[in-house]
Length: 226
Image (tube, rainbow, N blue to C red; front, side, top):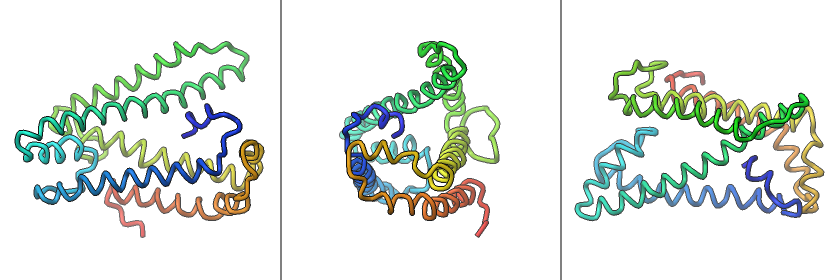
């Protein structure tokens, strides 16, 4: 969102976009759940398979569809490929921009190509590890007591980095630099939700993010922190 949002026209109504993005994202997620979860239960499989559900549980569903299974499976995994590519571009741009800005702050001339290929090389190593692990069926040792390396990367990214990064951000925007985003939002709208946004950044979001972080630890490690 940060990477793509930075490319928006300055006249864009950020308040409107901030409402539409989670609304549409949640709607698509609900439609995906309605399409996949009933089929998973109908096949007698567990909906709690984690990332492996995409390649094991759903593949079993496609196999049970008879002659139409390979066709729908091909379409599904092709769409997954496109979703992964477009998401990777956004995540790559965020990392590249951060390194380029850091280099520029030091008075250096950053090379987008060099930085991009360095990050791609690092992520390729991670992809090879996941492929060799084969969702836990490979010869690699199991990290952190988890069943697969894909779960381990998911733990690092979704379990730690995402909630911690968001928590730091709302602390900065809600407590340390409370007016940091005001002028950017006001370029495209009257910022009628300013009081509501500031209240949420200061009091609501930090509390929920702490609960999310604790919930992730419970989910990955079976902790009972509350």
